[in-house]
Length: 450
Image 1 (cartoon, rainbow, N blue to C red):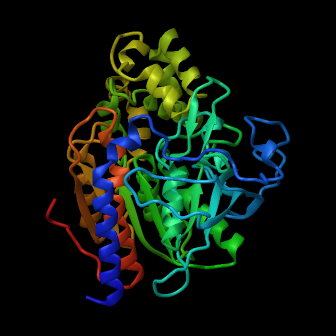
Image 2 (image 1 turned 135 degrees about the horizontal axis):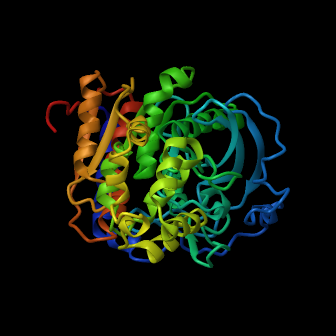
């Protein structure tokens, strides 16, 4: 084993050991961002990040379309005084990055130009691996559907308030981005289409999330002047975005130097996920998905028109403005049988509607093959993302020739905790996987073993 590989392995084992001691803290109400008071001076345009401010930074309605990935607007943003991720090593002070929020061009599922946003964390820590400093494009896990939920809106503080509900907004992905920056990675955190910018957030739309990731990579390249090696990274919704980006990269952005992808608990089969979370702490995410699909697919609008009752329509309208904490509090433990005229769940109804079923099938990840090695992680006890559909994604890719490394995550079942905890427990192994691929080491291939 090379010296670089041994260092990577030791660092990964250290991160994993620390993570395993305190995963509960991350998801039991403690914010991932500590020291939430902003540093001074604040970004000169800080007022522009307020919710839906006309003419502000996120008001993209008057921006002229440009080529996919073009930077349309950018501004510097100060970081919090301190950040910690329970379960991962403490970060140094000052924090090892400079940040800016970005609006960039991408395309929707129909190929129409749409502006979206994100946050670039340019590392100030040394990169000790081979070659130029790499860029991690990080797809966030579920944030919600309201504009206030966008991770780039809370760079300075790490936490915020949703004006729609008064509930908290915790930018937990900022902590992970800065831990990666401390390892020497440049990190681009995408907001996804419609999250923070005008229009509905098209939650878990395979194509639009892939486009946001790939054009986020292009935007990072333009901002830094660096065509650096790229890695896609994400857990949960972000795992789906990472997986979809890895699939579409060869046809949508063939010029990008993608080296690897990490997809933890990806919702590869939305219908299987819908069945699994209906009645869970994350029932509200079904509403996010329905709202997004209604925006793009008339067949789903027809299901809503025919089958969703007044209570369901009120719930969908409400969810369109909520963030994750609001959603768990208001809809956790509820079921979609409350939203329908017949008392059937939405999963049952979609199966009875061929056109709507085709929309869900269109969202399926696994019908294309990434051309780079992928690390997939699935939780044996995951209370949100069923393990079987993650394994099926891996088998689908293996059958098409992709090299897949599969990690079984084993955190015991604690409802509302187990799924989120995997973002921490998988971090160390994912970091080792990524560093080894950047070092040019052969990828472990678990095809045929899961």
